[in-house]
Image (cartoon, rainbow, N blue to C red; front, side):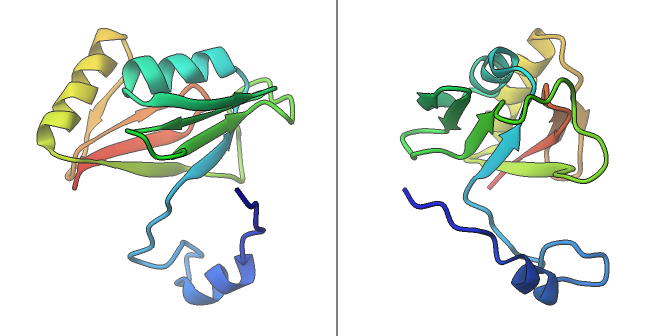
Length: 137
């Protein structure tokens, strides 16, 4: 699996004045800098229902189904708490149907995590402080 640097200038050139990514952009996976891999694993596996696809020293890679990974998480920069300022504010997981959204909502509620209803689905905050939006396809 190759690691390629993001073409930030290209993304910025294609974005609007708010410097967001271009409308219609789909991202296949995200990598998160986290403070606690155990809390991250619990949230993404036990609560959201993803599977651990691989682990490395200080990192884990999670996916829905058998894809290589949708979410990568690592502690390589020794973060001690949720990020502040620059960085990823939110991302969206698209699940197959409304029943999958309902199942995620139930697991979030059962684990005493805050969950908000959005026009398209639900949202919550992961242990790293990143908002995760879940909606049906």
